[in-house]
Length: 229
Ligand SMILES: CC(C)c1onc(-c2c(Cl)cccc2Cl)c1COc1ccc(-c2ccc3c(C(=O)O)csc3c2)cc1
Image (cartoon, protein in one colour):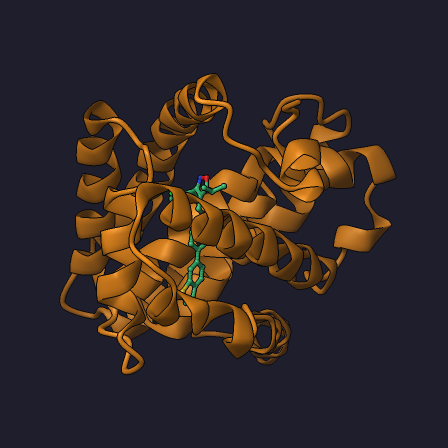
């Protein structure tokens, strides 16, 4: 069912996804530092900054991405960074990481100055992703599909992005049928998570505003990608 060239195409994306991860010396800090809201915010800022760098490297390996208009490349990265980081942190929180990152990451997110009203939708999303039990290929493809979403703000050449996203959606659809044969609606449920991700974008914008109200500092890279400060 999955053709030879689709397999090769998928391998490029999955290998890149596995190659690009936050380095150990950064993630191990999650286990070491204190648990004050202040310290948690600083750690999460470091994680997010490192994850954005990882995302940029992953995105550059998506076939065809580098031949897009340069301004559109930036618009796609800015428009998808938060969603891609929700997907990645969801993966960490739902797979019991052997290194104990899961528990400490959840603990630090829950105590980092994020107001209660955002906790519920955030952790509902985390739960809904966990229930899907995505295999690694699906996680890699879903992240690539999220990044190559044509209707992000300021994207000029929609059709060019669609032409890159379509083949990835087709491979993802076949992967879902392959790995979840008894759940014909699995692919549709997966795409439903992308809709839920869009709503989290709006919550995230408010989270940023309330952090900034408390004079919290971000890194230059996060300020650039989130148009803050
Ligand atoms: C600026 C900061 C306070 C912030 O603002 N919004 C969010 C934010 C939040 Cl709080 C939730 C969801 C999305 C965002 Cl942007 C954040 C924190 O973002 C994070 C991004 C990414 C990780 C993350 C990734 C991978 C891994 C791995 C691994 O791969 O092995 C092991 S531990 C870990 C940790 C955590 C937090």
